[in-house]
Image (cartoon, rainbow, N blue to C red; front, top):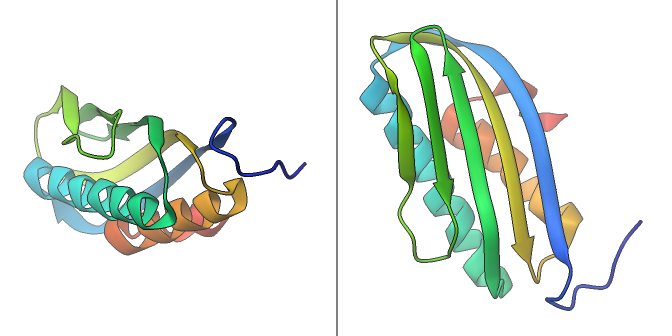
Length: 126
């Protein structure tokens, strides 16, 4: 069901994708990629006129540990929790975004494109 975009009703996207990385990466590189993805998504939301971010939260479940991340405003930096203890060769990304003032279909496209671009998720097109 398509709802009118009026800023009072949220657009929601939730999904999970698992994939191997082409080569193991250090945890700092994985965190940097997520921070770039979130910055890109927040920039896109600003350009769309989004007045409010309920949250953008994610979990990276890797073969070397788990990392959670979140933001709750357009100006906020990514907050992290958890720990990855070594190079990451495979990851499952679980993401939930609740934002206002943008069409849900466009949010879905922006999230999937960002995941493909910044994390190289082959399954993000689903």
